[in-house]
Length: 282
Image (cartoon, rainbow, N blue to C red; front, top):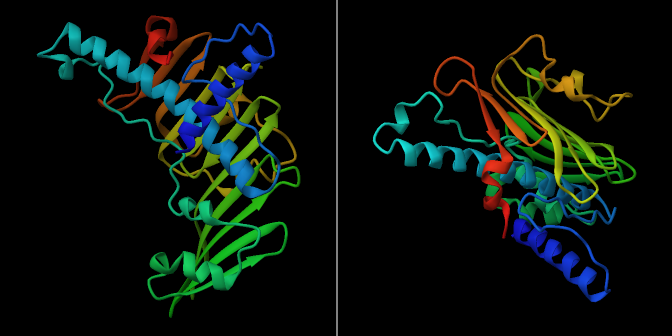
């Protein structure tokens, strides 16, 4: 549904330009970022996160699928034995529990939260707190407590989500997800296993992105971008010295550079966007 709204906004933008008599040289494509953050709260920046990641997924998925289709057509009987065939599935920024935050509202309290999350609670007590800067959903059982919290920047341009488990042994971070607007057209995204740095041009087309997925080791809250005083650069994506990577994807100058270990050793595949550009046109 959200993807459909993004597409609708794209066509609405083009229609408004036409009605106003302006000549906009914009080719409407599936890999464009068109989202208006109204700065109304967490859900507005969450929507921006969904729009940004949807564009990245579209770029990578369509290029990978088109590349594989070409190999399949050329070698219909043996394509699956080709080292160049991409076996991995691109699904970054999937964080267990984050889907619960889709129902968070400024007006939510413990009573309304208990009704909304009754099935997920599975008998646990439900409480919800909102102090104006942090929204916190708690599920309290007999021996443990599960906490899902979100903090949103004052300008509603960035957020951090934390999923914690509290037991008699102490508090443990299960996972986290942060989305930070580095500049007008540039974003940094991080979870325990993924990092991403992405920039768009003024029309919403991707100029550059770099994504990493960890095979071993974890990104931690100690390396949080949301709480950091300085902005990360492109190299930050693969700067975890205590980890190894099973996938690194970089898009620059119209070429997708894919390094993944889906067929064993880390290998690199290059896919030119111009070779498959037609798949992005509506």
